[in-house]
Length: 256
Image (cartoon, rainbow, N blue to C red; front, side, top):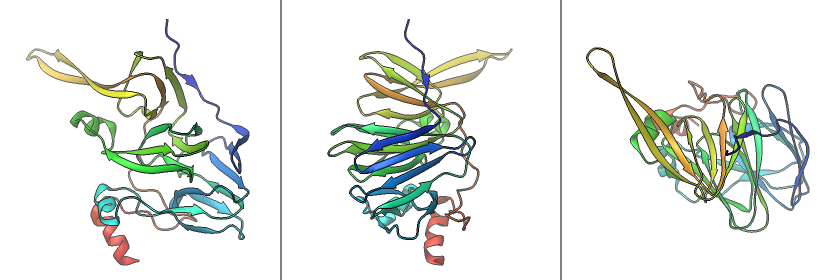
């Protein structure tokens, strides 16, 4: 019988990658704490920064797609990066579970939009449109964040709602996941849409049960609680929330 998805560690007291030591800690709203020697920059969305030491330098991370295109896609307009050695911490404004996903050279990862926390600079970032009307209706989003490790070992840290479980699929092995329940999957994993129709009641009214089917080989991450805040998250230090939608994004830019 195939093995069930396994709970990933909720606490990591000492994790390492090239030029980086990190900790995952916190019981309710988890925190990613990084200690960097300056040899490997780390990039992140600006509103997830929790604290840093004053000597740590931060700059802009270059993006592959233009500002207007990203605005209409509802994706982050700015990515920042740590450009020096020092210590820094990140968190999202929601209970959940942060996991560290290590990628070897040439490996890639697909992540549900707005749940990426941080990544090392040798991991390239992009995004693509989610296919399938049911995926967009029931999956809670239109886009997927894409990550590809260009050289060495890279790390992507993601935030899941509830707890995060992982299933490693064998070649040809599949698992069906509720569209709001998956968090990430390897590029080697394929995703399709499965719709089950049901007829109930006197007049034969119908209802649909929708799943995303993932087929291996590779990893699939699941989150036990699919929760998308009704408003956008606040900025670092409790600043103004990001306005949802294209109008809000462009209005925020003009206002600033």
